[in-house]
Image (tube, rainbow, N blue to C red):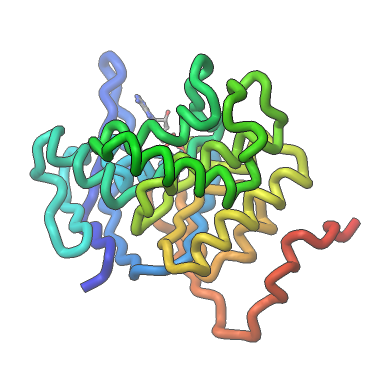
Length: 243
Ligand code: ADP
Ligand code: MG
């Protein structure tokens, strides 16, 4: 049983009189622990696919089995529970809550999951430490640097220790150095066992993923796995990019 099994997924958006067929008969298997880059031109259905995988949206047709369980037919509350326990999501603009501190943003998923305050505090403290954010714990997003904000977003996405991490163009708005840092953080989580599925326009990140899915016009055009060649040096990501 694959961790993710999509069968005949279709997603159609109604726009007035016209319909947008955002996903057409998408079938896909992803195993636990994979590192998948989803690529393709703008409008090809990448975000729609990621939102469905993250249970933020429902297909018009087809089935999604997550860890063997059909999640397409669950109620909204049941889906929210699965999302909370199993799925972390990192958005391009990070969606931090502006009036909450870094610590409060990271604590949000724990609060929603009903984790008691004492455990919440200790887990948030540890996460802030892990992501080098301890000195920034009580600062709001607008008081954080461009490099700290994505770290808060990733800490928040992983505080529930999800089985899979979904990221929609996480490096899209970042300068090169910060983008590399975010890539390294996501890859470290993948190396520790979390399934990583990243929508990216960045060919370098696509090349680093062990599997590349190319979307075109709502369908999967290519699904390539990297040869099991010698792994790159683990610190390759922090090396300066070639010019
Ligand atoms: P990508 O992420 O690859 O750029 P999307 O998945 O966002 O593409 O969009 C795929 C297609 O579906 C596009 O034509 C887009 O305009 C359309 N679409 C996406 N979300 C919606 C929506 N909520 N309502 C209407 N159309 C949408
Ligand atoms: Mg998109």
